[in-house]
Length: 66
Image (cartoon, rainbow, N blue to C red; front, side, top):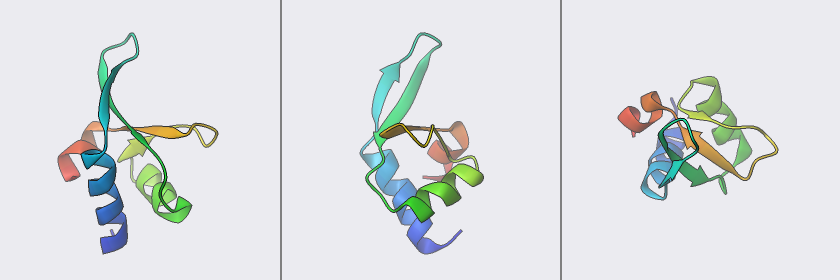
């Protein structure tokens, strides 16, 4: 992973907030970061979310990596 993508993941984690969406707690973060970095993190299963959403969920793997 490029250093830029690693930094984006760390920033997503540091600015995340807990959310309970009915199936358990999750860490959610606003995705105001470059799309190429968000796409890379999604492809590597560090974050999850739809392209229409303004926020993403951090996957367990992403939280551990951050």
